[in-house]
Image (tube, rainbow, N blue to C red):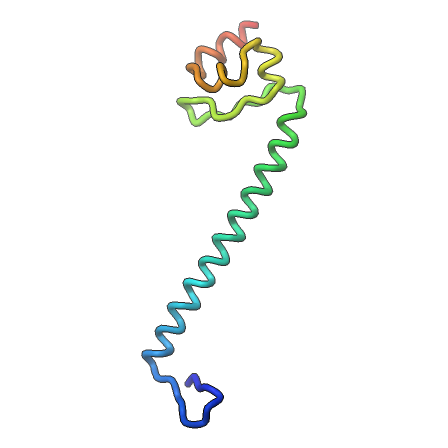
Length: 98
């Protein structure tokens, strides 16, 4: 049974249930914050490598290009804006043909 430091106050099952729910919400918020920080750190590391790589790096969801590194711009002759706004398959065919 949960108790306070006051000798007369004792917490029952309802209070324990509330405490459990609140603690689970706090734990979920902490986990989400840590996951977000880890994702941001991973993205930062990816960009550091991709932005300086001489190899073409493209990220696509299958329908649109979401990322093209500077090497892709250099080799393809397209600006990043052109690469990200065009049809990725057409652009890829043109890049490969180069």
